Image 1 (cartoon, rainbow, N blue to C red):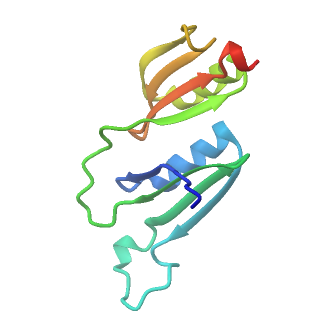
Image 2 (cartoon, rainbow, N blue to C red):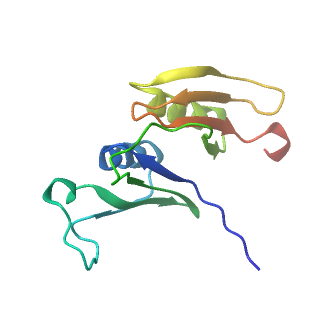
Length: 139
């Protein structure tokens, strides 16, 4: 049995903006599907037609996926972080600065015992991130 874990993040109506920003910062290929374009037996209410039902950003075999919460009961993201591992401290700085722009820095990007660069932030869309450069042992 092969296992494959991938984060799937819910948004409160700003999924398209979030994933467009993530593609700017992280690169990769972006796929977006709206509720209005998804196959359905039931008609989609007009106010929900542009909500994203599936977003996927893929790069180098890594994925992050998400959608807008069509229930209208979105209460924010709690109890998780999306972790991004990069090869160098310079790349960690670029990614960290891009994700933290307009958001909140939780832990400044700094050298740690396990990484030459590690930091935590919450982006402008409310998603918590951990950015880590490869450990010295793998360089």
